[in-house]
Image (cartoon, rainbow, N blue to C red; front, top):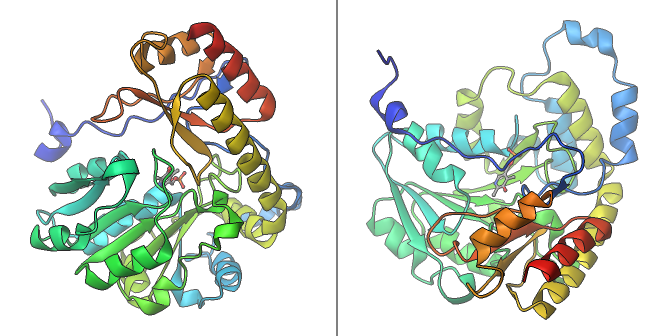
Length: 357
Ligand SMILES: *Cc1c(COP(=O)(O)O)cnc(C)c1O
C-alpha cells in the first residue's frame, strides 16, 4: 500500500554527490570550499550563548537580514533568510508557480530544479545552452511563449562554470514575463576584476530573485544557511510561505558573523581562483578540454581514448579515493566536474590522472 500523492510516487528525488566518511578521500565532488570557515565564525560559535537555545529563534532572522542588507546596500525588506539555498528554490516554486504551470530551466544547470518541479506536480520547460554554454539570445521569448512563470538560471553556471554578464541578465529580466531566479551559489568566486555585481538588478527589476548561500564561498555547507535578495514584492509572499522558524539560532549567529567577516572568507576565494587557473592549465596539458570557469570547479571533457572516457576515469579515480562528479545527463557523459581543492589535493588528482590517461 502506498499513501503518497501520485507525483511523489513517480518522482525520482534529488541524487546528492557522495559524502564519504573515509578521511583518506580527496573530496572534489560537491563543490565545498577546501578551506575552513573563517576565524570570525569560529569565535561566534565559541561565544554562542547556549542558554538562549531555550527560546525560539528570530522568525525572520532579523539580525542576519540587517547584516545582509548592509553588506549589499539594500533594505532589510529585500532579504529573506533560508535554511540553505535549496530552501529558497523550493520556496520560489511553491510561492510563485501554480501547480501545472511550467517552470523554466536552462540546461545543463542545477539538477535540483526538475526535482522541485516534480514535487510540485508542475512541468519543466527547458532550453539548452548554445556554443561554449552561452545563454540563447531568445531565451525570454521562448520561455514566455511556453507560458513559463518561474525561470531558473544558475550564474555563474553549474556545472559549466560560465558567467553571464549583468547586462545580459538585465535584458532577460526586462523581457521575461515571470519571476527570474538567478542562482548565485558560486558568485563569490568570480574574478573581482570583472566587477560583476547583480544586486542592482533587484532595484531595476521587480521580478528578479537572487540566491546566495553560505555553503560554498563561506565554507559553511554543514550549517545550512542561505538567503534571497529581491524586491519587497517577491520577498513578502515568500515570508508567508516559509516555515515559521526556518533558520535556527546557531546558524543565524554564525551566518551573520560570516557575512560580517567577509574579508576573511575572501582570502579563500583568492586562493581558489589562483588554484583554478593552475589546475585548469595542468588539466589542459594532460589533454583534457577545460572550459573557462568563474566558480570553484572546472568542467573537463575527455575523449573515449583518454583512460576509457569520463565514466571510466571517474570510477578509476574513486578506486584511488579521489572523488569527482560524473553526470549521466545529456551532453555531460563525456565530462567530469572537478571541485577546486587545495594545491595538495589537486596534485593528488593530477598524478592519478597522469597515470590513468
Ligand atoms: C550549492 C548550490 C545551491 C545551494 O546550496 P545550499 O547548500 O542549499 O545553500 C544552490 N544552487 C546551486 C547551483 C548550488 O550548487
